[in-house]
Image (cartoon, rainbow, N blue to C red; front, side):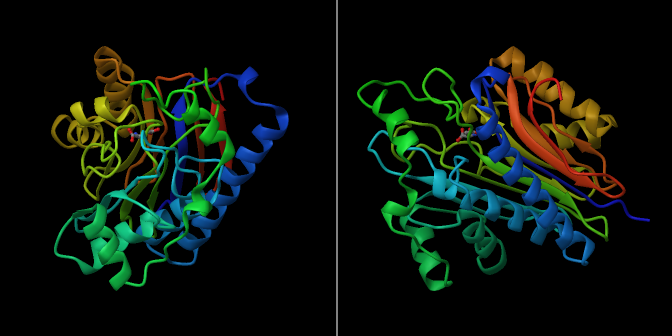
Length: 311
Ligand code: ASP
């Protein structure tokens, strides 16, 4: 029988037990847990892995706790520019958007690009125009305003510092969300969405929407969604590298993830992690940072939520 699985992340970074209050921790775990439950129901009801990852990322984008959609961080200009991607492992079809503004759920726009465009990636105005013509919801600036993230940005706005949303010295909120899943037919899919890095240069694009860097899915190997310092993830072509190690070297999912995240990325200086699934339903959620918001649910199992390293 096909093993169903869903695994999600809400960002990785310098997060220790002392950095969250019991209440904050509870709030994060509640959103992570209800998200995997909802996405798992899609899979149980015969929905595709693509539908499940889109739904999971939509839930996380709608939560102000995470740096994606509603909770997106501020750019150097004090605006929100979001990136997202989605990929279907059965056909290698992919859709991505970069630097979009005012889009309520960038992952839905990425899905529309996958379904209705001959292109893989659309950026800025072109993506927004495409959104308008495909009935994708917009939201006013106020929807994206979050007091904590504004404070976080205010502390670095006059400098050249740009930072992961989860850099603890300024704010302990983590950023970027993602999901991977395998459905009843053994198809895998991946989706990732982010507001990027606080005080990033305007029009800076990270790894999230780059197919093969922050997001990748292939039925013959795995589905991968990454989070971390995007510049390093792009240079290491992280998501595709995990897939390649499985395809060309015969590594298991765990082996491939561990080589890429715990060895290659560390040597390069890239902080972060990823979630991945294989078509057989195996899950991997490695990270080389202090912590990573994550959750999973698979056939015969119970909901797992994790934040810190030792969980
Ligand atoms: N990878 C994202 C980026 O560089 C940031 C993150 O994962 O927190 O845009």
